[in-house]
Length: 164
Image (cartoon, rainbow, N blue to C red; front, side):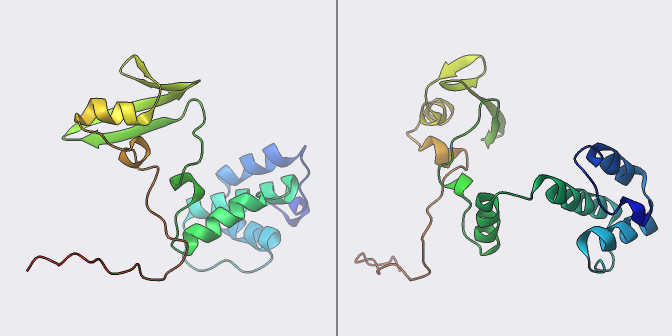
């Protein structure tokens, strides 16, 4: 890898990404400096170097991640839930996996519902009820929803007395 590869076009991107797969540590560190513009931190693994340089190359050629993704990443970095955990629509083909009482359940998202063990369901709550025998919030059961506060202010104290 030479510095002649510094500017990558959409046409050259697949070749540049393929070259990263076989690049040695020295070449990856040089490519990091070229693409990112600063010296890499010490002790980065080769797989991480490859992924980071590949990501930057793709961002430069394709215009970078969407603003919504950046917002999600910032929200996650701040310790808040991502939008996915508070109700983003699931895409067809996505698989949800949940272990319940020693058994692993897999649910596939299909057009208009969900598929589990060859049976079609219209909601995750119906699947959670089938698995547990109790009424659950399906998104919560599958880890897709959690209670999220928008601020860090404490909630009002409960009027219930705490058990001693």
